[in-house]
Length: 408
Image (cartoon, rainbow, N blue to C red; front, side, top):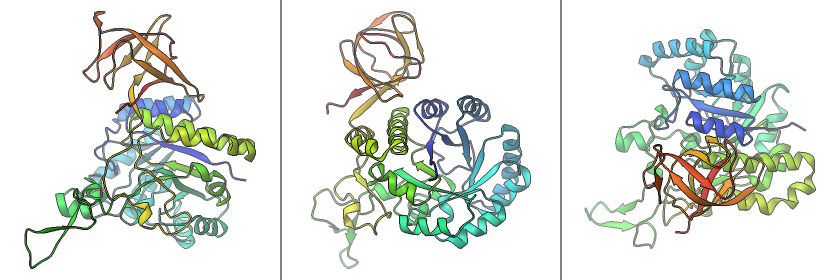
């Protein structure tokens, strides 16, 4: 049995540290350039160095995405970027474009190269091709079934690694190769600038009746015909392992630390429980499902893994996330009577909140007092990113996540 890696996304240094603390075996991040999440905060060179050092101190790997489809004017900057990567020394680079792959091979040959899902990797000959070019790992296209992935595993070298998505948002376009954003807004999804028009609502316009918009679905709000449910394979860890997948990938470099902590902790426990015994995994299924539902999500689907998705994989009446919990902040420092946080959302004195711990415990606690940076007491903290000292009935430890149930 292959022991799968749990690969977690991080869009900032704070989220990287959260992913490491909450169970990641590896974290993937983007730099200031060449990443397909241009709207994420992403990492400066200095942050990348700090993040890699922190992860390596905990025996966690860091992979850097450079998976845009480059134009000629990108190539000189790409050479400089890969030369910089040779100094920073991440554990791998995630690449889609053959030209970018060649430059990485030339300028930082000692760093592993992984092939992104954007490269449309759908058959074992593609995997063999990339292996012969020097790739260590290939990420499967989301359109593959587990049966197809298992067949690929049987036809590629034993030491070649397969990475597949196990959780997160699905793209309406083939392996993420989308032109809608470019067409509607001039922002190229294949260069990291996607505006997610798949989440917009649409109607039909019949050419002889200009200005008259017909709903595609009988709903006065229109319809979200491209809006997919989110992938969730928490109930199918055994099948994922049986397919021969080496790395289980969570989608979400735009997500908060709360989301990352939630998915990392839940999948970490599910994988570890299954590796210990199938019985333990099955007996804890209710907990996994309960916890994973506390992340923001758009309802769940198993994607293409078992069958071609039907209309049931789409959400036609809205494009909003289900959001059961609200992120309040992370305990950055803790003393004998209080915790110091950068507040992310409003809470008040007297609120019942929750400490989310990496080991799986959720500890209820009450907000007793709030002070600002000057030591002045506050009844509530309505302004995001305030530096606060908070007094709680139960104290967190440094790195613990604070959250509150969304009562709306």
